[in-house]
Length: 289
Image (cartoon, rainbow, N blue to C red; front, side, top):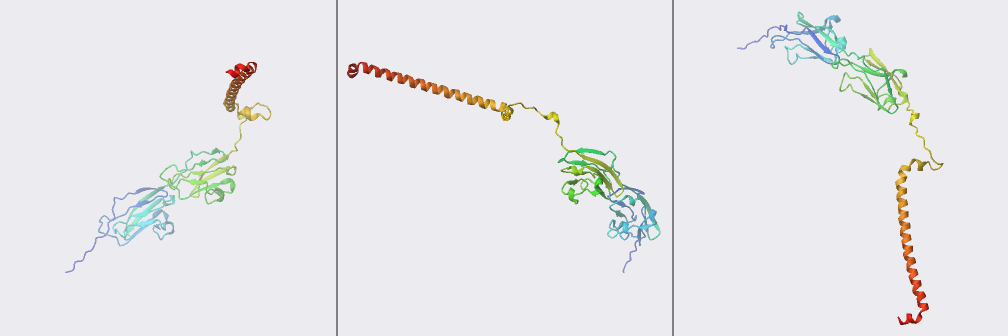
């Protein structure tokens, strides 16, 4: 005898959240499910109520590649995962089964708001580096797009793909999405000007960078007095003093040694002369001796 099992209709759970918060650039789960996990609906449809009932699926251009459904593996789980959120995703969403039963929820996507506590005048010197600050007030948020440009150069993009900035740019938003600041290395006078940080092609902040020339202070000059052609000696007197003292001492020692040798030699010669003279005066005594 063959037994036929017929599953009961799906009854949507009422224990769903009706207010859901998300962050721009992040993902959010819009919950919808059957109370009995053994049941499944005949049809399921997600739509954006406050956008003329736009279907929320990968078939719709504005949502293409951003939707993931779970009901293929878990038929009673009708929830929808929406990724890469933007502030345009704000609104009322509805999950409808079998074209009759539905639940709704409101999604609030918090976008990046640029901090107003940024410097607007920055001074640096050639060869130095500078941090051009730009960040979201909430570290959980991230913009969909970020662009830095040099306003005074017809909006030249400030990035490593631009030749004049190649190899001199570092960004932080890969590891810290809310930190949109830009680090610029090896500054030159040509880097002077106004820089603008723009997110989502609409919100921006600007700051002015002033790269100053290095000017020597007149108070750093030290007068040096000396004879013409003898400047180096005067400037290095402290260095030469011990050396000259040693040379002078060596000369004294050499003179002393020479005087000693001379005196000793002279004394020997006097003695020899005395013997010679005595021999001439007393030849017989000398012969006898």
